[in-house]
Image 1: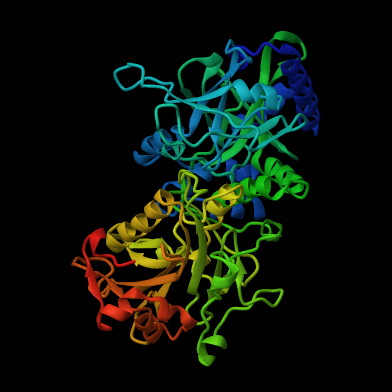
Image 2: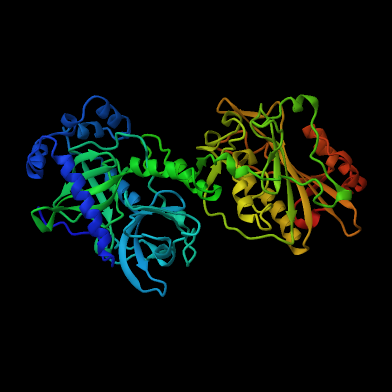
Length: 606
C-alpha cells in the first residue's frame, strides 16, 4: 500500500497528531475482535462480498436506500457486478460542486493552511475541528468553490465566500467536526445556493463493510480531486468508519461518499502504523449519524436564532430514497420558542384615534378558523398576523404594519419554508401542493413589507411560513400583482408612510380542485390603509384574477387584470367585514362598484 499522505498544511500539527492517536486507538480496538493484526483483518475482507458481511436487518436497510432508477445497484451490493450507469459520473460531478477548499487565514489575511469542507444545507459548511478550531479562526477564513480545472485542464474562476461564525458556529473536538455559517453571496455577487449542498442523512444502511467509498477532496490544498472507489470500508464502529486505500486519503474535512453519492462520513484522520511512523495503515471518518446526534443534543442549549440553522440542516437532510441532492424548496419546522414575545399586527399602528381592528368573519367562517394550541385564533408573527381556514388550509387573510421610515433591505438568500408548530401540520399546505407545477408559493404578506426596525431579520424569516403563502400561478405572482406591491412599498419608503395592509385569497365553491385535495383560489385581494395629507384615513382595495390561468396547471397562458375596486366589493366577495373602512374609500365616492382597471401606477387612486 502506498504511503497515505495527511490532509493539509495546517500550522497546528499537535491537533492532527492528537486526532491520529485517537484514531489509532479506535482502530486497534476495532481490529482485535478475533483478528491477530490489521493485515490479516484486511486480507479476510479481500475475498469477501458486502452481502457476506452484512445480512438480515443491515442488508435490508442498505437495500431501502438504493436508488430505484439504478437497476444495477442491487447487483453491486451483492458483489455480483461492478457496473454503473454512465450517469454515475455525471452524478459525481454534480455532487462535487458543493465541495470547497477552506483557506485558513489570520487576522491580517495571511494564509495559514488549507482544508476541505462541503455544504450540508443552504447556509452551513461542514469541516473538521482541526481545520477550524475556534470562531476566531473561522472569522478570517474563507470557502473557495470551483477551485478546480475544466476538461481542458484550465482553472475555473474561483468563487470565494466569507464564513460567518457570529451567526452560527458549532465545533466538537472529540468528533472532530465544525459546522459554520457561510455568507449567502460572494464578493462578486454569486449566490451560495448555486453550489447546492450534500444532505446528511440520519438513516442507517448507507454503507456496509467491504463496500467502497469515494472521497472528493483538496489534497494538500491543491485543486479539487477525487479518489473514486479506491477506499474499501473495513469497519464501522460507534461513531466512526474505517477504510483503506492505495492512494491519498484526501484532505481533512472531505465528504466520504457511498456508491449512491450519499455522505456516509466526514474524513478526518489517518491511522498511523504502530510499527512505522512514516506510513498509515487506514483512514478514519466520523459517521454522519454521530454528527447529527451531537447536533440534536446541542440544539436544546441554543437560542432560537441558532436553533433555526439546525432545523434547516435537518430539513435539508430529509431526503427520500433515490434523491441525490435536494433542489428548490426545503420544508422545516422551528422550535416553538421562536414565537415567544411576538406581538403580531398592531391595530393602533396608525394612531390610537385611528385604530383598525382585524376584519370580522361570517358565523360559518368563524367556525372554520384554525385555533392555536394555546387557544388563539390569530397567528402572531413579527409585524404581522394571520387568520387561517381549516377547510382550505390557507389564510382567510393576513394583516401587516409597514413603517416606511424604517424599511431595511434584506436579500432573499434561501428557499426554506416553515410549518408553524403552533397549529397542526395537517392544517397547512406544504410542499406537496407546490411540487411539479406552475404554482408559486405566493407571499400574502409580501416578504419586504414587515422588514423594518430592529426586528427586520426576524420579520424576513417569518414571511417564509406556509401559513403566509397561497398558490398563485407563476405568471401572476411575477406580473402585475408584484408591480402593485412594489408600487405600494416604494411610496411607503419614499414618503416615510405608515401603512396597514390586509391581503387574502377569494374562496369560491367552484375553485378548481387540484391533486384531489387542494382548492386553488382564482382571485386575490388587498386592502391598503394610510393616513392621508388631510390627516384622515384612506382605504383602497385591489382585486386580481388568475381564473384564465389555472384551468390547466400544466399548460396555461393568457392575460389577467388587476382592478382597483371599492372596499365593499372585497367584503361581498370574501364575507369579511372591514367596519368603517368602507367609508374611508375614495373610490366608493367617485366610481361604481365595478371598479377601475389598473394598467400603470398612475391609474391607482389613493
